[in-house]
Length: 256
Image 1: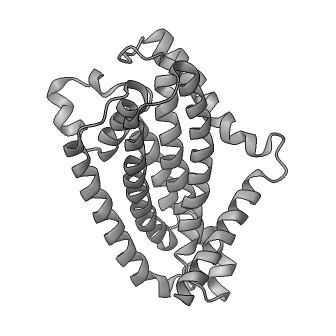
Image 2 (image 1 turned 180 degrees about the horizontal axis):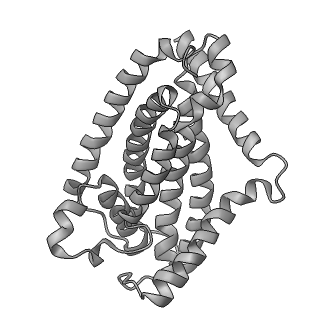
């Protein structure tokens, strides 16, 4: 229990340090938490909303897209920063004995903090649009837990590989951009032709993003059976990532 408490304290301190370092000496400071998704939303609103007129199931496009942008901000931020977290603290890793897993987990914590603040703005917009959300909105909690599991597992795997192959982070950056296009962030999954839906649904984020939109924007609970696949993927990725990270951790100091 004592070791768990020390781990939690260290994780808290590293997360706080990550947040302070990111917003230190910036003009808008923590307001960039809202600035980034709003800028992305503006681009999507023009391209997908105005030009391509993407279907939104009757929901105003800015609100439809912002829901996806908020969720995606955690995926992109957590995975990109988490992948480089060990290498970014090379001196600390090489000379200080401590649980190295706190580094990628702290990156996840920072990304989650940003996402929750942006989600608060989304909540205000939802209330302004149509009053108090329905009980179906509570489905966002298990959906977010599954999203955290998937991203955390991937981060542990990618972080480990990036320690030994320093250019792996660039591959992750490219992968994140491709993953964005294959995820219903700025468009509805219904636009995907039927013959490609089976392949498209192999992306576990499809069910999570569509489920979150259903719960928040339509007031309808998502189909629980659709969440089984993301659950299996999330548990599998966390298990593989934890084992791989723990096996490779003793070799980090000589490789960073």
